[in-house]
Image 1 (tube, helix red, strand yellow):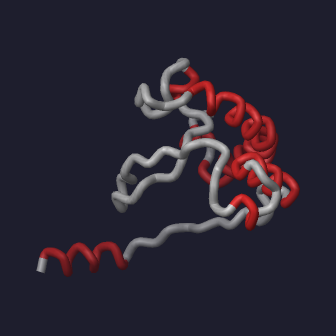
Image 2 (tube, rainbow, N blue to C red; image 1 turned 120 degrees about the horizontal axis):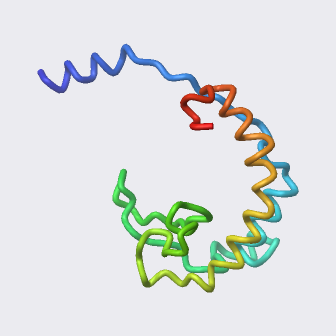
Length: 126
């Protein structure tokens, strides 16, 4: 019964959803994929990436995360992105810089203005 009550409460909630078509131009997406794969041909890259991705368990489903952080508070302090000293910071430093160079203009000029309008300055902390 408790589970049914919980599900009933959830069914009365709603969320707004936004799609930002072409947040990044296709050329930028292509450059990002080439950086990550080390090859502009997906078939030739065969699912491999230029760096080892994190494989820690995801907090939602427990599967390997297959990720690496481009930017976060730890990295800004000069620490390991997830606090794990086994992270190869040198290997990731150049790739992070290249990805940020490609994505930062869209983050600051497209995504942030959208978020400020969508949520308001009070929720965005700016």
